[in-house]
Image (tube, rainbow, N blue to C red):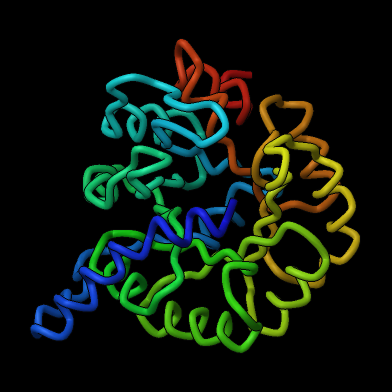
Length: 256
């Protein structure tokens, strides 16, 4: 599955390289970037990162004509600590412009995409994103991942390193990752199980930890918080909800 995503990014990367060779280097974003880890710790453990993703490879289109402005408003008003924004167009129907559209409500933004090239980090740094997702197993070695972690940090971004298993976690640690996101999805079957988070949390060692995929109830959030997760990332269930704001309020407990 990740190989398919990597192939899908090659055209974008080639365009970025051509623009770079022609001297069109993106300027660094000059606005405020709210602290991503800081916001999570302020609401954690069990803080909610609410996601905007119009589609997914496993479920197809989640919401027709989804407007990120509506979602950032609902998320900001109902207890989200941060917002994850899909910018990948082919499989998730995202767009980098969504980061700019969501920047005015004060939530730290995580750019969620398949980032494998330094120029993609440069493009992220030219946006209002506070954090950028790096998927550990999309890199050939922990050395390559370390270079991207350090590049993101040098650009003023907080790298969120995603892992699926113990080998990924070892690579993330060797790369110096300080924010670990555990993906509970099996990439071969596209099924999810929180057992991945339950198992890996035993290896927590001082990093900020996020459990992603498969969390859609207050009880599951409380369980993940009890295990030690600083945050959970919730996307699909919010995108499918009749009233995403009301659902988020139940998940965060602000309607209690």
